[in-house]
Each structure stands twice: as structure tokens, then as C-alpha cells.
Image 1 (spheres, helix red, strand yellow):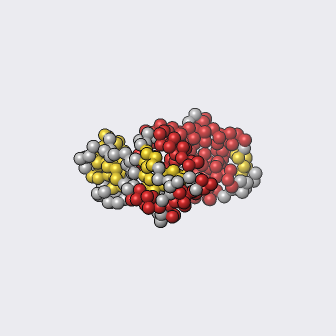
Image 2: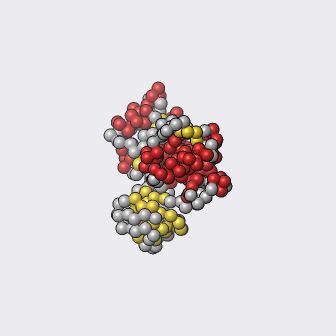
Image 3: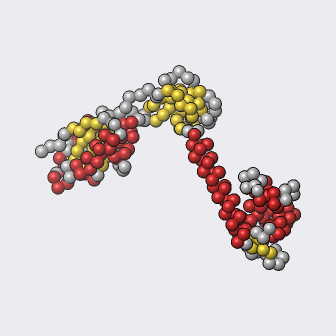
Length: 271
């Protein structure tokens, strides 16, 4: 081995191949102790059994491992401390890569409308609430593809330039009285059906609203988490009909205001 033990101590797992191998062997011993099969360790980390034997002798000399007879080894407190210190270094490096490196390369996802190849410039549009990518740079917003994709498949994109040109959706809100005040029976089903036909999505909030949709033979697109989902859909250019019980109405309209989403409350309740 080119490095001696003292030199190796100056380098972490990421900067010393020898330390990286020592680290892997120590982990394997800790998992298997006290009965340690050197060939199993060799197979697990991709080195020869003779190399494992040499490393074991070194680890024993460094007091990182105790030998208790043939094929019986145990990691010492010093060995555990060294493992912890090297693991902390690995953890810091992973955090750096995750937060400072990968985090800077934002990759979004779009649906390919044409065949797209990695590295190609694409134009972006919004349709049916979903970001779409087309080969070429003719749109108001462009990006660079980081994956290949066939039409209709998802494609990774980065380096988005410009603004995707589309109109924000609107929300029409129908308030349904709570059951003690008439409930779903107070809402005319024909009016709900007509409003539903004018919108891209139907959302319901609370049981009274579900009953209104059932009576009108509507299958709501949004049933749960409607306060956030309705605003998200509108922000993606979809018009939404929100049918909500009066006891949750304010929480939904407050959320829409927070999201700067345009909405209108219509009164179709029959007295």
C-alpha cells in the first residue's frame, strides 16, 4: 500500500482511496462481528480476500479492530469513533452536493408534444393545466431538455428563459347551506350542471357539496385538499367551479386571495 498509516489519517474517505476501503471494511466488520468471513467482505466491496487480510492487519495495528482468534474480529471504540468522524464528513459532502450543487440546477418536468432529444432547445406552453414542451425556440418561453422524450412522454427541462404565455383561470364559487339550513336540497341541480359545463374542473368541499354534485350527476375532479388545489388549478390556467359548504367557504376564499386568484361567489340557492 502506497500510503502509511500516519499519512492516511490526514485524509478523509473522499480524498484517500485507502481510507475509503478501510471505511468499507470497518462497516462490514461492524455488521458481521464477531464472526467475520474475509471472502464475504471481499465480495461485498470488490477487492481480493488477500487485500482484506492486509487491511485487517492494519486496522488491528491501528487499534480500530480487535482480533479474538481465527476469523473473529470486533470494532473497537476507536474504530467506531473513526467511522463516525468519516461518516460526518460524508454527510457534509452529501448536503453540499444536494443543497449547493444540485439545488442550483433546477430541473422541471413538461410533457413533450414532439420528439425531443437531450440538449435540444424547446418552446414551452401551458395547456390543460400542464406544461408542454415542443422542439424549437419559437415560443415566448424556452428551455433546454435534459432528457430524451417521445411525444406524450415526460421530459426534463432546465434553464427556462422567458415567460410561458397563458391566461390565468378563474374560480366560480357556489355556497351550499349546511344541512340544518337546507343542505344540498336548496341548490338547483340544473344550475349546477350548467355552471359545470362552463368550467374545466369541478371541486367540492364538505359533505353537503358532495351531495350537490351527486344529485347533479357530476363526478368532481377535486374532492380533497380543495382549498389549495383550486388555487393551483386556476394558476395553471384552468377555470374551476367550487361547490363549498358555507362553514368552509371563508377558508377557501381566504386561500384564493392569498394566491392572488380571481374568484366570484354566485348565489343560486333557492329559498
